[in-house]
Image 1 (tube, rainbow, N blue to C red):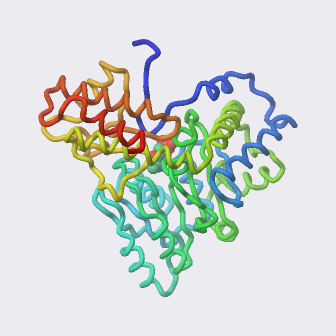
Image 2: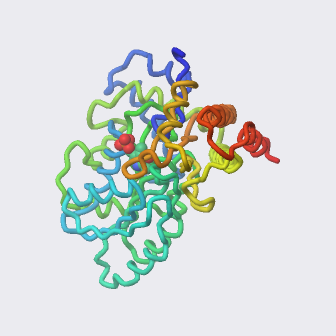
Length: 383
Ligand SMILES: *Cc1c(COP(=O)(O)O)cnc(C)c1O
């Protein structure tokens, strides 16, 4: 049906109407006093959201641009780095590092499993010469719905002294990422995920220790030179022409997030994850990630005896709900339900109900009609 599209993918995520309306305003000059005020306001809001006093810099880039900035500003060609890779986005970190001539060592885990924190400890403790300059980790691995144990990995990194560089693209604004309390050095994210915004902005939080590394880092950089952004941000300005309308939108979404409160936002994502997982169990649909490794942003499901792409196609056609598929070797094997950002209890019930109806149509064996919605509703009402 026209205009009824519902996004249940892990980005772009749904955008509130008040945010959409903010986007429709006339752009103003990016060197004007009025725009400086907006920069000041959103920068304060971003620090609140990131739980940090560090710089949080705003880029006109997707999340990958923010990731790339997180590498090229703090490292030099030939530097040894340790990269966690248990999915598409961990793999992307490794690729970025290789392109820039870093000496990459990977700690891998099977897709769907979380990274082994002890493997990090072993490698870091063995590096007594302190050759490893940075440890690079994806917090929420969107391709598989796995949340890596960043807190523990970070503790091992702190004991070693390397920089910790984090892809928090689908964990920021979904679960606790206390940058200052944990001492995270570089944290990258993007607007189309937990921020309730369309795609277009990337964010990088940078610690004082990372700025020290910046001073001696030798990779070439121009547009993504974060030093330029820091210098201009100090004057409530931006080095280039930023997407002015996205700043209006960011102003509104940050206001909405402040109103809800961080604790409530995290609790909502946790509840939606629990409700979705309970529904899948009730429907006899195997979950791809184990309970203790589950991401609060996205749930991956590995149906048996039915092609995941067929489920997706059917839900899209019948119900105008878009779910995500599997990537690479998981295509057709899994589908993923995004519950990140502007998602309410009602959305979860709708998605689960539509999935049930689809399973019935496809004669999926072992699922009882109504069982998924009942299980989700029970979690959502908190009993
Ligand atoms: C979406 C996403 C990114 C960034 O992807 P872009 O398409 O460049 O915005 C990076 N990491 C993770 C874990 C993601 O989910």
